[in-house]
Image (cartoon, rainbow over all chains, first blue to last red; front, side):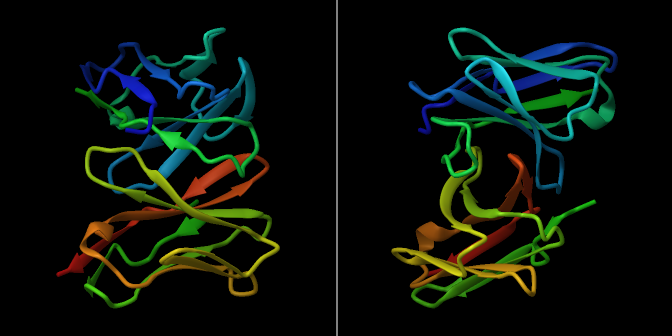
Length: 114
Length: 110
């Protein structure tokens, strides 16, 4: 158990809908990262937050947004969903914001867009 | 554009032998490299990392080699154990951005 909690584990929705994925980082971790893993793809880095502030941005679509709350949990909002958004979404957390901080991953949320 | 590539989707090795997992990258600006291991239904777990200023880092049975001129990274596992059977991802970082390969599924045969 990494200590990172992602909810829900599975999500099934329809095209055009909006969903929210939630991540609770390990106790004491200030950084949260979001990744997308599509079928047969590597993990795609989406975005990083550190102590409530956006720290780094990857290939995150404009239809997607994220935030980190004062209690350090994070939410990833996906809107106007398309079939191609079906993927496994991982959240990770680390103590600090630098790349040498070990990231601990949650078990992921599997999103199916029908 | 896949900046980090793992060209071998799978690898099988006998228990006790060496496992060598390979990774190639295209961006010469990458300054930090990592390997993660992933079991089914779990998130990736950090294994070992190396800075671009080094060419080798060792941690127990795991050694990562970096050849910057060839833009090549490898992970050696010696000796391989059945519990090492998992999917291994290499990753590289630049400016706090992370790029992952597609993974190599390692099977260690008892």
